[in-house]
Length: 251
Ligand code: BTN
Image: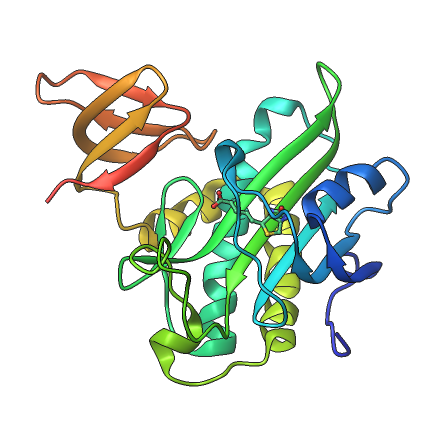
């Protein structure tokens, strides 16, 4: 990772050849760790996604990493960090690999409708104060193929671009953008990031199906709030606040 251009993010790096999950490792280290510590591995044997789903993390082909931040903020601000990260990573892929993914709320980056990146934001917090925020980023970079059960939903930068991209170059770009947008957010708030997020998101303005734990809602995605909540207008004109769901574009 020589060549990081950041001041804080990624200045401390914990590198593992193989680990159960960088997210789990980052949770373990968070209390002691300096802000911006990066935990990164060549392979995860038990990588996990949202809603305790497994995350396929084979050796040497992807980016499996977790970043520890320590913002002086209340816990309800945490979901915004998924969106800050989505903007930072989208632009990193554009800058380092020359292709532009689309964002699917809340945490997926897609190329040609298939997932290349997932973001998992988790917290260690007191009731009124974040202690650590742990941002997990999983990116499919140089995989040639996927196991059968993932082949229809996952893709890699190699598959879409037809070329290998050095993972270090992408990691450097992510670290740089994350630092820029983290500073922007702490100094000026969420405005610019929200604007960029909405311009990169596929779902805004479209008809979508949102599957939440309490049921399924169909409607038009109007946008996101400053807290990163998705606003969905159903066919009766009722506006729903979606905090957590899987969404699908309603064709
Ligand atoms: C999702 O799309 O559900 C989020 C996937 C997050 C995967 C990353 S890979 C690095 C970090 N370690 C994990 O175990 N998960 C996250």
